[in-house]
Image 1 (tube, rainbow, N blue to C red):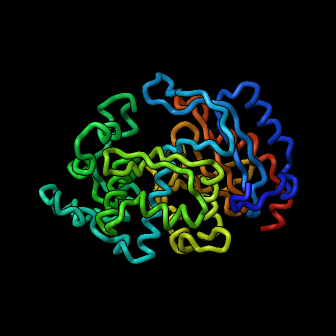
Image 2: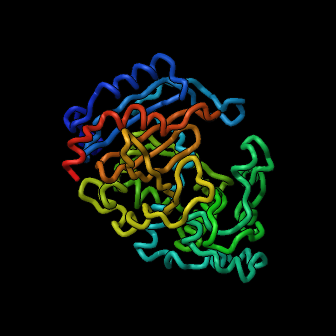
Image 3: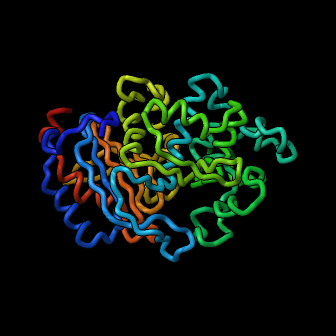
Length: 358
C-alpha cells in the first residue's frame, strides 16, 4: 500500500500458515467473537492481515452494534482504551522534548483554576501516577456498568467540567500505592499535557507522533468542545495502529526515525505496579501497558499489551520479535482476545527456530 510497511508472507518469516488459515475460515463462517481485523508483524515485516464484516460501535444499541461495515485496510476503527497508550506516548515525547517538566511533576499545581480542590495529598499526585493509574483518587469504572450514569467514566460526558470532576474525587489511597483502572487518570493526564506544554494533545499528536509515522487518517473524540477524550475512542486504521505498536517493539524507531525515545519505550513496557486480584488483561501495569504471561505447549511467553473494550489489542512479544494487532466489536464480552492469540497465532510459531534464536 506504499504506507511505509515492509511486507512478506507468513511463511517467509517461518510462521505456519495452517492455524492462521483456520482462524480466517472460522471467523468467516461464524465469528462469535466479532473479530473485525487481525494483523501480525514478525521480524520487522507485516506478514498477515485479514479483515471481516462487522458493526461499528454504537453506545445507544443494547449490544453496542451500529452500522454494518465490511472492514478493510482503509477503514478506521474505534480503538477504545488502546487510546490510553497513545496518550502516554505523547506525554513521553513531551517529556523528552523538555516541554513537560518530568514524571515527578505535580499535576494539580498546573491547574490554578482548581486551587480550591488542592490539599496536602492531592498535591503529591504526579505525572507518573497518572501514567500508571495510581493517583489514589476514588474512581468507579469497572464496578458499575457503562450503561449506568453512576459510572464515573460516563459522568465525564455529562458534567460541565470533566477535569474538575476528576480532581474533586476524594483520595482513596496514597498516590503511587494502589492500582485501579481509571479513565479519569488518563483524561486528567491529557489536560495536564496541554496545561504544561501550551498545546492540546490532539494538535501535538499530528506533528510529533502521527506525522513521523505517516498517519493522516485518524480522529480524536472529545469530552467537551475543548477537552480531548484521551482515555478512549481514538479512531485509526489498523495498519496505522500497528505502526504505533511497532514503535514499542523497535526501540521507538519507525523507518529510521526516532519517534519516541528508547528510554521512554523501555520505561513504558516495564511493570511499575502489580494489579491487585489480577485484571483480565494482565497482572502488572506500565505506562498504560499491561504486562502479561501467555502459555503455549508448556512454555511461558512474556508479553506486553494494550487492550480496549470490544476486542481491540496490541500484543507485543519482544522475545519473538512479533506483534499481533486485533480490532473487534465484541462489546458484550462473549470472548477474550487472548484466546485468539493462544489458539491460532502462537501455534503458528516455529518454536524450535525460536529457541535457536534465543
